Image 1 (tube, rainbow over the protein chains, first blue to last red):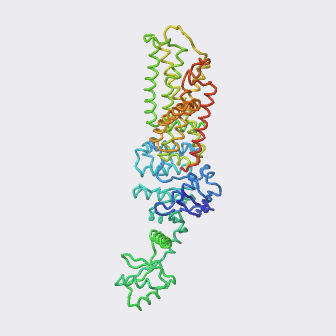
Image 2: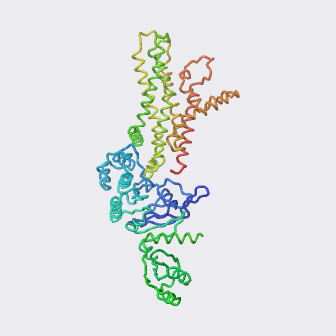
Image 3: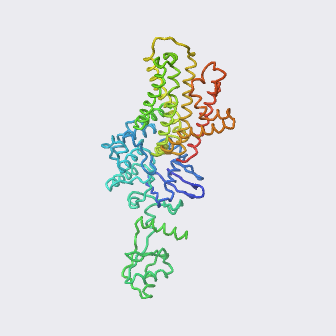
Length: 301
Length: 261
């Protein structure tokens, strides 16, 4: 069952298009990573899902109905950008305000504080809390009422490695309990560890979306090494089936349209280049995302 | 609705800035009412001070101060929600934009009543303690004092609604408070210009001029002398006040509802 459906979503500010004809679906139980560089339209999209930014055109449905209805029913929880707290109120008071707004009993505050490890610091004013503590409080507020769908914008921002791990584990626990999570972050390593699906945005446009496993596997590439990396690079560039060729300290990387490394080896041998290494390389999510970004860049130019 | 108001009140009273503003208001109230009441003491050969005559001073002497401070409190409360981004978080948490706005709109009369109530209680207590054996010269019917109180509250409400409009437009507490205070300067200059061109009747209808009239006791006299300048029929003045409150409320609500958060 789809929890979130976005169809043809567009947001323009005058001449500038922040989000351009965006369509994607988040299904029940997924931890969906929303990726992209700064200014790619992630927060604007999330703002439109939350109903605080008016879309120029397009449709958003949450649980098959309008986003405002789903929000009012308390089926969705989340945060946008930095933790949005009343600085003069304590953590506990902030959560009480959120609970009142959500129409919940105050008794739900303590379990939410406990879930994010903020029970001991709950009587500190938000002003006196570190960014990491504020993040935890914001997450606790989002968890109030046990919403079916969590939308979190950079939830690990400002957290120490231990805090990141705790949040990661919490997200996984929520997913196992059948909750759906949409998470935006710059930390691709984090995404690879927790997300089941991703969507990549650039300049407001969706570049790719799908399961993380498919996404990484689809980006299998070949790594080659030879005595002279320059000659190798030059030769590979002239090979007909080679695509997305790049070089780094480890060697030369290329995709092969015919998926036939033996043919490439024979071609290179005929040009007097004898390979020291030819292997399939499974890229990290970070490498795959960067490859998608580069491909988009090349397409645009 | 009660919940929305109690939530607003909770957030307001928990804030140190609120109490600083309130203490400043109290200090100025003591000063303004003190001067007004003391100047009427027999040592100064002023008119008789004592009830019911003292109501005039109690109801209107500190009204401009109460009006300014109610607007400042509203600007501080509303614009801060945008700075902290709690206005958007409240919507994310499931409240509708209309309900959020309703909470702020309900807060306006609550603030006005709280500040004006402070002045009335304080002024009345002072006047009561200072009352000496009566030799009352003249006093008005109770309805005049009641209408005055309602008129002053209407005037305060208008200024607070202006603060709301400015706050939802500029979304920053410093500029919001500044612009709210400066607004009266623009209005006075516009009125002065219109007076210069002999458009006195139009000038009197400008929002801040109506506001000023609402805070003047003589506007509520049942039988004003014909020579009194800038005098409104009480019902017309109240209608003009209501009109401006309605217009500024609609403008404030429209700006908030139409803009992205």
